[in-house]
Amino acid sequence: MRPHYQFWPSRLPHSITVPETSVWQNLAVNAARYPRKTAVRYFGRDTSYRELCEGSERLAAYLHGLGVERGDRVILLMQNTTQLILAHYAILRANAVVVPVNPMNTAAELSHYISDSGAKLAITTADLAGELAKASNGLPAQDRLAHMLVSQFTDAFDANIEGPEAPPEQWRDWLLTQRPLPQLDDGQIHEWQQALACTNQPPEHVVGRDDLAVLPYTSGTTGLPKGCMHLHRSVNHNALAGAYWGSGTSDNVVLAVVPMFHITGMVSMLYSSIYLGATLVLMPRWDRELAGRLISMHKVTSWTNIPTMVIDLMGSPNFAQFDLSSLKYIGGGGAAMPQAVAQRLLDQYGLRYCEGYGLTETSAPSHSNPPDHPKQQCLGIPFMSVDARIIDPDTGAELSVGEQGEIAVHGPQVFEGYWKNPQATAQSFMEIDGKSFFRTGDLGHMDEDGYFFITDRLKRMINASGFKVWPAEVESLMFRHPAIQEACVISMRDAYRGESVKAVVVLRAGHEATTPEEIIAWCRENMAVYKTPRAVEIVKALPKSGSGKVMWRLLQEAQA
Image 1 (spheres, rainbow, N blue to C red):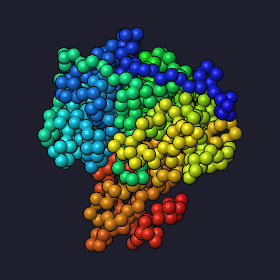
Image 2: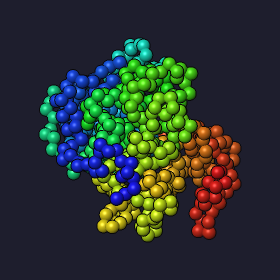
Image 3: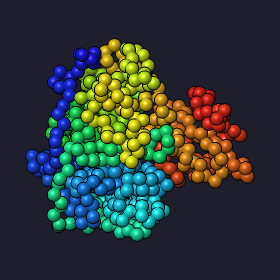
């Protein structure tokens, strides 16, 4: 008996049976159960479960007509929109595999997702289509996209919307501008409304629990992002478990602001809500005033977030005017929730902020705080069906209470391995007591109650407001700058984001006049904004070991 079971929600089993069906069928079932119920609210436009299901079936038929077959990978590059949900379920309905990609990525980064996944079709919005086309056009002909399906934001809501649900003023140009479509070399551009008008029959839905469903990418110490192979059963497990853990029902109203290209937003929010038959209130980006109004107007009951969002909302001058009384569940991860903020939520609203922990490789949560017994600034206890241990990183031996070691996870939500990378897959798993455990690379300890706490990382990684930044990837991009001879990326403390990115660089001869500001500006154009260094320090040389390796830890310790 594990000690954490004494704090286990009494209404729940320790493990659950994973459905034999696909993720798509969760939508089909609720379209039959709740055909007129609102599935999605987005800038004043409601989409019912019937409309969502029928729309995704028409879109699946269109994708099939473009040659999408069972197991094909389809890139989905979008912010949180009704279109993203329609497209996501349409890809699954067409027996294909969703490749969710962060919209912050630039063409230099997007080219890897296209070539590595082997995707020949991508679905995106018009504001991102130019960068995606640029990425495809720069690849060898055999790796390029054959089709790109493009939506304008206003394909899903009324551009003339006014009132409290209207987009913030600073978003209006971004959301309301009708953008021209780019040129796709060796490929075709398709418009969203044309695809949704498809009258063909979709293919027979034949995939099930053991088929590949999604291929989200995660970076690491080697630089280039790696695809995580998740079957329908692994993501379905956490979709169901997340719904049960938060006492979810079909009457849940979920504020969907965590991005759904991210594993947490996709599984714990989108998949769980559709499984329940709940209502998703969408936000394409974070804005504290809009969030406060939407929670108040729509009586939001569940809000998964990043702690910085809660901190920002509480800092609004209008905070006292917002009505948060409908909230029954609030929680998240990606960064520690400050104790004072968690205490204020408890004192003012009776809400216990439930922190969790997980990775792309574990379909989001592998640990979560039990809603009735959370501990602050804690990862929580092993999630449903999970066997989690603190192990010696060298031997795999389980360590005692309080001892620091590597967090290792075994469970049905763990991925199958890295796409086309058997070596990285083998290095990430270890057999313990006859079971395969995923090695998270995070160091932590377990207390006497069975709660887990993170203390350090085996891998180099920077956590900026919940976004994982891998220094090796940023360094490889920075080496493309003509003035940079060497670069070492480290973290620096950030009062708001937790951590931010800093680069220590050596300039090439003849480029001594290059300034930190110029390098930062270049980085903003060539990498996602959350990866861009907030500070650049120019030095004459980087510290190196006898073998010539950059001693990044020395720079990190000096920064701390």
